[in-house]
Picture 1 (cartoon, rainbow, N blue to C red):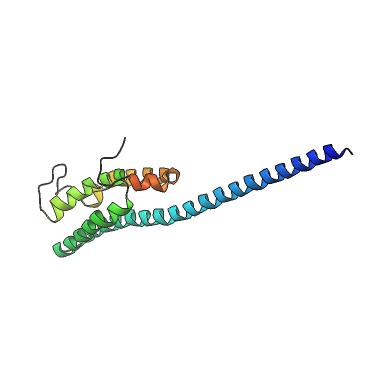
Picture 2 (cartoon, one colour; picture 1 turned 120 degrees about the vertical axis):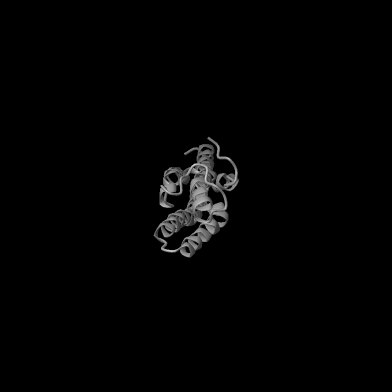
Length: 162
């Protein structure tokens, strides 16, 4: 075998091997990053689902309450979720969909203002939540495609993008 050809072949094999190592390392690093982000998202979305469930539990608690004190206690829990966990874990569309339950709680349970869209006599707390349920289900089905930076930029108090 020609020494010049042998040297070229050796250099080509080394370059190809180095390229393979770099590509494999890059792919492994990308997979690790993707897996880590997915695990962090999993925790976040589990908490988001818990908050959604808490909203429905509190509304059901209002419906099941036997006394005004029990209803007002459930309303206080609703406002804690609304102003606390809701702001931290719900996106702007879900948070906006809480407007109807919030109107029910403010107008029919604690009676701090007149309800605009709700008749307190013919409504229950649970009946105020179907829109929230639809939006939550829709958002949860789409959420895995979002990055954490996109989630962080979504302010629940802002008007949602269409």
